[in-house]
Structures are given as C-alpha cells and as structure tokens.
Length: 148
Image (tube, rainbow, N blue to C red; front, side):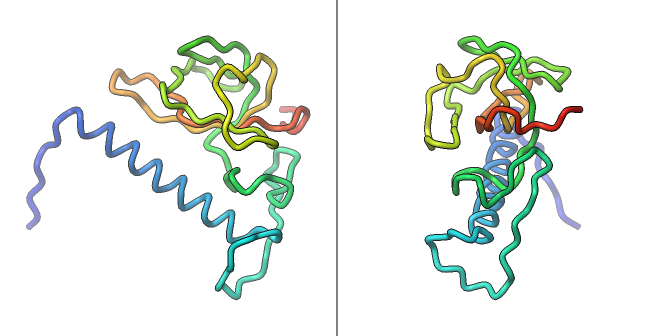
C-alpha cells in the first residue's frame, strides 16, 4: 500500500502551475507537429489535419506559437493593471505578474497592449486565494468568435 504525505499549502498551487505548463507545452507541440508550414522535421507518418477551432479561424492560419485550442475564449470587457474582465465568463480574473500576451503578428506583447473589445483565447490557474489568475492570453482577429 502506498503512503502519501500531505503537501504544504505552498506546494499545491506550484504543482497546478507545473501541470498546466506541461499540458500547454504538450498542446503547443502537438499543434506544431500538425501544421502544414512546419519548419521542424516531423517524423510522424500521420496525415496533416487542418482543424477548425470553432472560433472562425483554422489552425493552419494561426502562428506556430498559438495553441491548437484555448482553455477559454471571450471578449475583453475591461482591463486594469492587475485584473481583467472577459465577457462569457462569470468571474473576474487577476492578471499574473508574468503574464504572456501574444498576437497574430507578434509572439510577445505587453499586458498594456490588451484593450477593451479584443477577442482573446486565454489560460488561467487558481491562485492560493482561490481567485482565477490569467497566465497567458492570445489576441484573436476581430470577428472570429462565434455569436452565441
């Protein structure tokens, strides 16, 4: 029988972040290996698939640093120095101090580039206080989110 130790409260959130990053890296790698304009050698014999993400753009039209799917999508309602409200979500999010922001034309932007009305895909984790913290945002072309 396996014995488990109770992890200190500080370790649990770190494990969530590590697992989230591992899942993101796996997703990005999987997306990268399925692109038709792939600059890396793909040793897999699987056919290339052009996936419609259901948000109005296909994976082949996205930069290689965009994931194959997003944890959530929405439209920025308001953005401050440390928080963001995104329509389609029932909660307000904190912004990670180390947030990564991407656009279709630039891999890394500043959080100052986030504006009200932008359509975005985003990833988040639960902070130690139980509040959701956005860790990464991908700005989508205007008009790509389906009317819901």
